[in-house]
Length: 229
Ligand code: ZN
Image (cartoon, rainbow, N blue to C red; front, side, top):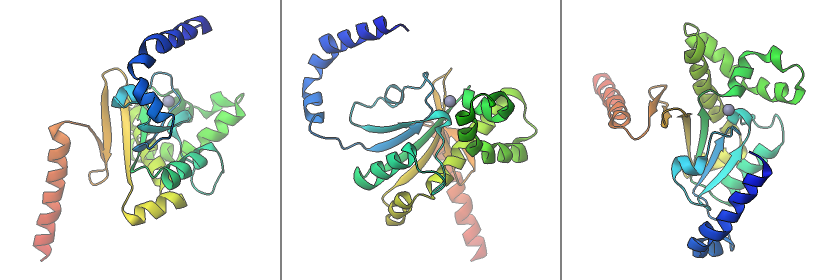
């Protein structure tokens, strides 16, 4: 997309979109109170606000290749500062880590040799190697796109674990005022799956299935408790 078409888009925004939403933008000019921190890949095919149908001011967004959250205190960088600010100052109630299908970064994790000429990318992606090892261990029987999806999912789970090492996140989790969510966005069909820790798997969001699965799991736990009692 050449810059001319980007400037055309800006013109359309100022001429049509802004006047229709003037009140919202004037209110936003005074401050923000986003409801969630959305951490996703820098991939151009992901539009968090379109995907979640949120308006400006509702999502605090951290975009970084591979939606990787370094473990605390391994490296101090933009992702750390973004999390600390979102959780400690803005007081978001939810953090969503969202991976996606056909992620070039995850393909890079599988072929680190191809990244020799990109030392910073290679160093960044080394942080996803624990997810690769986990995928090889538990999903080693899968190949091609199925293995790539398994790695993408396990990478999201790994980043949720990494989030739990951040002091600001730990403090809010202890207060019970923060929830963590792991998602994978399937670009081709618009489906988003969510990680269900009790089941240790990803299930499509907003289907009765996820509710049933949760209920089934709760039932099993209750039954187990009853049996023990
Ligand atoms: Zn990606």
